[in-house]
Length: 395
Image 1: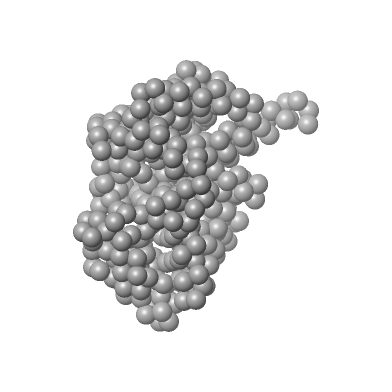
Image 2 (image 1 turned 90 degrees about the vertical axis):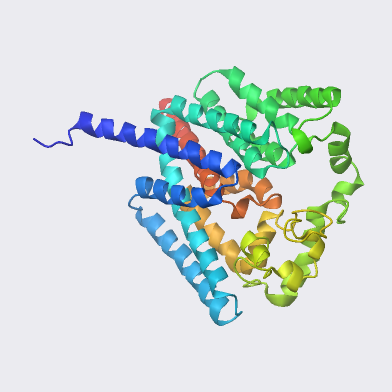
């Protein structure tokens, strides 16, 4: 008798889900604590469990991804003379991100259908762990803000599936009181694409959150405490559209660095890991100091005279362009297409991710594979439910 009977196979699958949920919790908690060295083997582990045979289309796209990555690596070593260890680190990181993002998409597609309640529990525990690690809401913690957005996406999907509204709107309220524009815009795009009728309720919660912040002042924990007036001064005045280090710093970086990149090499950039990475800062091989004359934008722990703290990598797509040029944009495009499977889903996913690519270092963070996998899994699941609903209605 075959030991892999249907009940035995189902038991194995549920065990696989449970193990993967534990890995997810440890990954997000380690990510929040800044333990990247622990996250990398966890990404390998989730990839080993959930990577599966590609469809023909996915296989072709993945080969295209690897082809572009190989060209980038060869150009880095043979043409632009990038350091061999930095080139290897960049290739290794991007390859792992791609494979683990695909694995997480497969995992979320499975667990959201079979074990949504367990998935929600794992994400809630991860968020509570982030509160303990950061002693509250730390608005300067990209890691914690990303976990909050992941929690929002999972609760949003649960709400669509017919679960409790209370937890969903509570997460929305917390998301709004952070006054983090990346979270706001990403959430608005996702709701607009999947459930536009909820936008009115969103606006009501937004108004309530702004009143709360105005009345109680600080919205962050510890050093991250920022008053409503301080946040508003950067978003509701001309400073928001002024490309100045003391105004809109991200806009300043874009208008300052893109012309330099065009003059240098817009196709291949300055080299993998050379811009906005710890590996370059620690070894003083970052282009911010050596080639761009932007010492003030190097993280203060690597340059005590920095004026602006760690902001050089705060524009995601700019980090891609500075390291890999237009070739990097093509590389990420193939990755998104693999995850999306369909062009319409690809476009929707880019819309949800765009706020993070315009602000924040998430595109080169070990938390990116989890975020990418979840977004494209939720979009795919919603498309599946919509198609089934349309068939039931006779469309």
